[in-house]
Image (cartoon, rainbow, N blue to C red; front, side, top):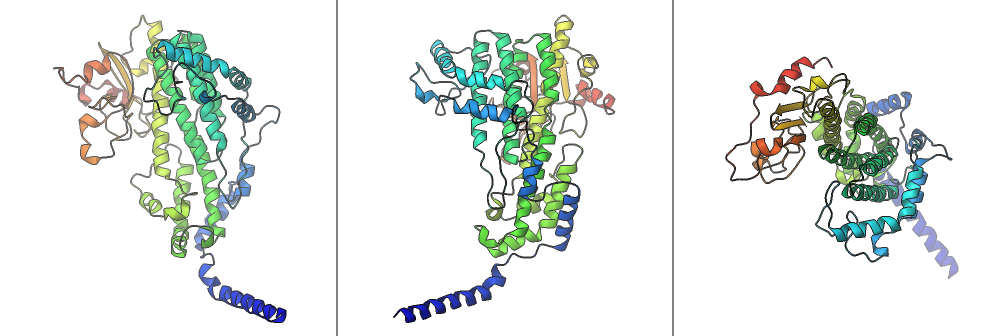
Length: 482
């Protein structure tokens, strides 16, 4: 009986081996085009990572005794969630089901302010630990890249939580008109943003964009409500210069490309996809590599809007690349949007300093800010190296980027239904009308209310773009060499 079982087992193994030999050509990794291999070798010669192992070395190490990332993770381990205690009301930023959004410089209801202060008191140890990372520039989070999986981003959850804690602290400081404490919390935000500057992943870059956008909103409101001294505005302006979103975007693309190149070494059985799909992705490798090279080496904010590669990249089977290939054009557009906000915010800080020195008067052009308050008028990333826009009259002024729709809407910041879209056109092209387009703006005094009233009973129509009275159009011609 045992001999028969042994014979049967041998037969089964033989059948399996024979079947594997027959079908192995069908499941073997399809050949990557020769020109793709050539490009990969060129990438390696340039010193860029081409594998997860290379990527581990590409992520710079940090001083073990002074690693901001380690301190932030330690702070998160001490965090006490709102559910750990009973509070008189929900905690702003920590109540996911709440429809009420509180921002810096908002006046809080007494019970909300009381709850927030208790919550901050219960998390004082976390805050004290965050403060220990102040002035530490080295940062590296515990990430290990390999050929078999995408690294976990649990530390991103930790940093989002700490960012909300710092922002809540800023909201309470502004609520009590403690402007110096409000300013100190904005400085802590810079530390969180910079802790990701070397992490070579797109999720890290996206988180950095979110934190930067949040910081810029806080600075905008501080400027508009005049909560900052000239020295504090100068400090924030200098610190904003250190945020290089295009550089971190490129670094993330380099890391993403290294993860993507793993596909040249894997078979379809590693993916939830068909052999045909994997053959398709590999056949497009030369185009993929060319597109990535364009994005990584562009001296300014590149664009894929009108490129054939844009469509080709989007046609790559998403089932194969859900963990690898990201929507590069969409992330680039978000990067440009936040960079435009950054440019506008830096200019707003300079403009407010000018007002303090000139009896509360606005300059007639942005060029008046140079070189005392700005080295040069910042460029609009949507205008191909032309400066951001500025409109000025007795009602006040507005600084703005034309935004993603690439249409000058004279500094309109809200749609007809009072939504602030920050230059992003509506998804529905049927509503793509002038009244529904906005710019990326910071406005002072009553400019928005005067030129773009949301009250339908108002008799004064919104001011439409007109190059003949647009002072920035004259400025554009003067600033081409900046």
